[in-house]
Image (cartoon, rainbow, N blue to C red; front, side):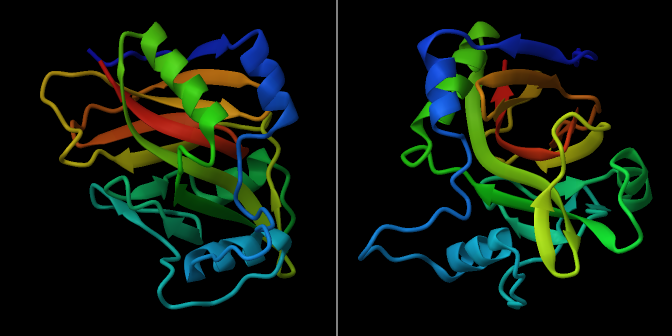
Length: 217
């Protein structure tokens, strides 16, 4: 049976302090001298800085189980079989007090565990507490665009429903799926799957940035 509640947990001790010192998200960070970035990395970095580049290779939407994402954005999370925001634009605008010129904007990218070891450690700990196995990991930002400028939505706003397509290499019959989210400051939540489709995990979260992972148990 799918769990119908959201179980929120706070990670304490050194891990929490470390996350406060080093935020989870690395999207948009300045690269070190001599390093190289992919075209997608450059697009995301530019977008995070406030200027959105229009590049055909970057999907502006995604589909999960026949449902198209309601929110325009950057959909580069190839570790899952699609990622979507199913809450309507109007509902998000109302829930976060957006004006007519402000539009919701989402970013979904693969999480690199080597670049985000603290987020990975927190995800592993949360999964272990549930007796679960960790699957695909993503960076997710739920923000807004206004006059070509991008900023994050607050993390204490209204619920926003997301869905990830479970990849075939992680799908297993008769198992329960959930999502772990780690936010800067060391707050870790286990979000229950709220639908019955065995090919997806659908959950309610809030705005802002976080490291997300599908777990199976």
